[in-house]
Length: 134
Image (cartoon, one colour):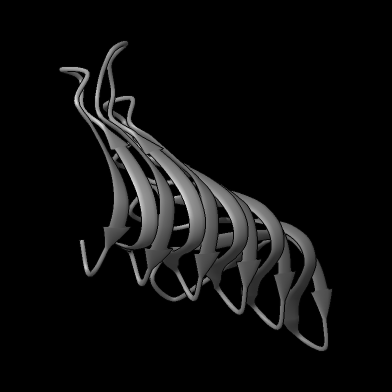
């Protein structure tokens, strides 16, 4: 087990003195990541649980969500889709918490609705069309 200067801890595989392979990193603030590492960065498949209760599970690239992933907020809202450099990017589905609630399915660019998408409000109203920067 490794303990960083700030009290973080890591248990897992090492390569050339760096976390590389499968491991668990626990931050001093309570955030926790379990999954694949490459050169001390989250890289490959993993699950990150934040002290807030939010959860991300999916692909990472050089420390950031990248590729397909799922993000769940503590209030029950979620996003399932593609990420690029830590942002929602490409196709995805976001749904607000609750049974009959707002839902968006479509394209994202840097965390904003952009391109074609369908937004359904809890009221039943629907918009189908193009978005630009939300």
